[in-house]
Image (cartoon, rainbow over the protein chains, first blue to last red):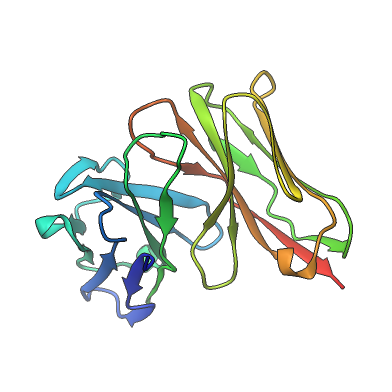
Length: 117
Length: 112
């Protein structure tokens, strides 16, 4: 099966601009997650979709970040307006189930490296 | 204080060495413990996971969890240059959803 696809792989934007990141999960995976790694820090949870519904968005840093998953397929993460501290690598992951069932199926994409200058 | 602490390294070893990677954590609610491997410019890839305490072995890899000490380990036997990567520990509580809390990752370099 195809993996989790993210694009762009790299984006450089100026402070104050808008950027939209896209994630295509593995087909049939209802659960989609966004994580972020800021330089020198650990990977941190942003939010979790179950199909098109936001199950948990406790990690979203502020209201400049907007995640959507229309139709329960691909997801977008928009940052508007971007700030310098938003620079980092944004990872998307997907899984078939939302609970541990012994067949842990949580697959990450390669990430989008966002640089805000 | 971070929920999960992990030494960032780098850890440099010669080929064939036994590697020990460790994490400590503070949240006693964590029940699932995972090790991910991440190569440069790639996403994390799950190596092993363990539920609650105990050991788990998979080929050259052994994962250990000591919940009483809030300490987890990953051992790599007969390390190979291809094992050179960043190793991330991750944890999750016993809830219905797989929200992961990661360590910062340890960079491992295995020299031929």
